[in-house]
Length: 439
Image 1 (cartoon, one colour):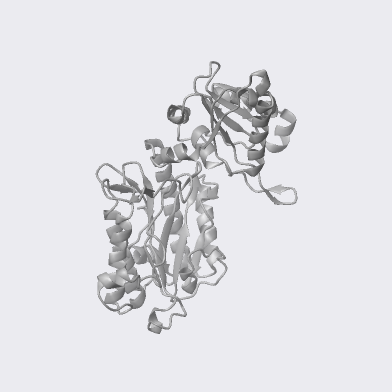
Image 2 (tube, rainbow, N blue to C red):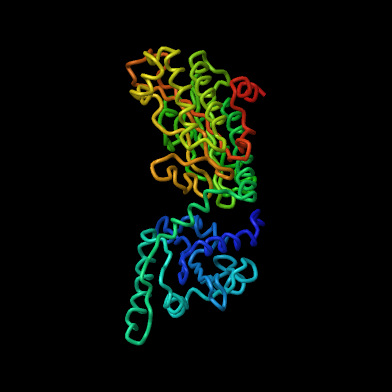
């Protein structure tokens, strides 16, 4: 599959990072390691998000090195060499020449030569940007290279004097999505929206939670999204009150709601959608009442996603609607201000209203700058996901409410005027959901 993000954009990202680096510095970033699933079977490989962001290179056993001012090329990739015999078993390898031709690197070497070459690149650089603590095995290799340089100090070698967390610069860059990134995320959102619609229609036939999960994965795969962005949550009935429920093995029961929190990953970019709907295709009066509160809270939160507002504004907007709704339905008592101040809503709404979204489903980026909530700016992508969960054993509420879990989640990108919803192709009003399921 041809990438929706150009080689030129990856090169621009590397250039931008190098422009932020201190003089006489070097950045070192390893690819994700392969992980054993069991015995001699590996988990499907998924590239490290930072490495993917800077290279688009999807192989393990690779290391990106950025050396501003290097005469023979500032961007260097160490990767596996072409090997026809190995490729017969495991598939095509790009090789060092391909890294230059296809991925826009200035220079490339076999990964087998890294111990001989990289210490010489580090030598003379005063600062090393590196993700310390992320991969302990690779941490040890980096320290070994530095020790080699230190052992030659009497011969005039200059070891680096400072290590700096690479994430400090890189993750702030990743927070602002380019037009190409938004295009990929929108496509992932469209695929996931179709999957949710198909799962809603499938629910009328009954069965088990995993039957709906199968419908999701089938749709993802059908459109070229080969993996989920996270383990899919398909919670019927009281299972919808378990925030990270992934067992997905219970029967679908007439009269229950189903909460599906699922999204595909496309070109390593995540989508993240939650919808809640009735197995029967029709909401009960109690389900309707709670659902309308959550939907109103989501509308209020999305309306608060706009430049100039800060990160917590959407959460505050949703919280007011949710808490007032609980008071109006008799699930809480007292005034709105008192209920919020005392956090009386916490038994029913215990999580935040969203998170950053991108190459990671819970994407990188600071939520505060100093002690202040971060201001929303164009290009930032986030989820908006208020919910209400009435625990099945909550003796403080009438039995008719117990075991109802509802969450509604969409992916949005901040624009100059407000925000753009990327996942609007899946219905979320009661009338839309019931019409879709009756079709």
